[in-house]
Length: 222
Image (cartoon, rainbow, N blue to C red; front, side):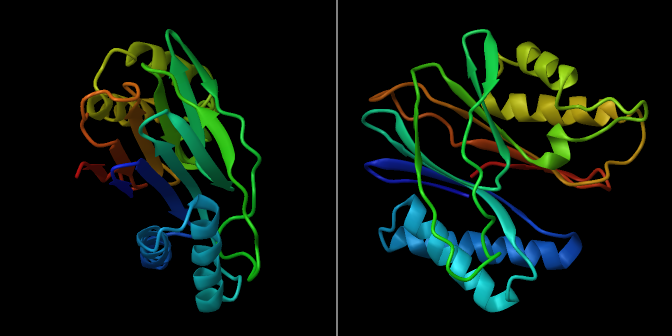
């Protein structure tokens, strides 16, 4: 989910526990809770706390949602990030890609009174953020090779000059090829965001793609 105001770009990537309709309902509850908090002018940490309380009140800690919440100041490129046992975030800068090191906190809804803290991340003009769920970076092909290691690094190099929407299509297509005709075991989520710099002309919205174990691929652009 994402939103742009005069001051901020806010982006959240949520991966609800479990599979099927139950996981979809949990994830949608998380998205709606974060939206309501954002519209009430809550910062990332407070938004995470409010969403966590709502999820806990519904599920009593039996279900939880891994979420990455990111708010970028448009005037400076300074980002505030909450990592609630979240999808992994990589930063592609020039020709290299590295994981953005974040302190992993509790997933939303695990406990009723969890407090969250933001971590600062500074973006430079030309930076690309790639956000990936564990269903992508932990995926194993028939040979047992993990996609999130050498195959992912090669795919990021190959797609570094492509537009964000083409990049997520490339990553998902490469993941499917990595499985060599076998089905995916877990949902795979990929989000790509290019930061063009403070004061740059508006760019297309973040590009995202979701592939389900049955190989249904949905590309999400708003």
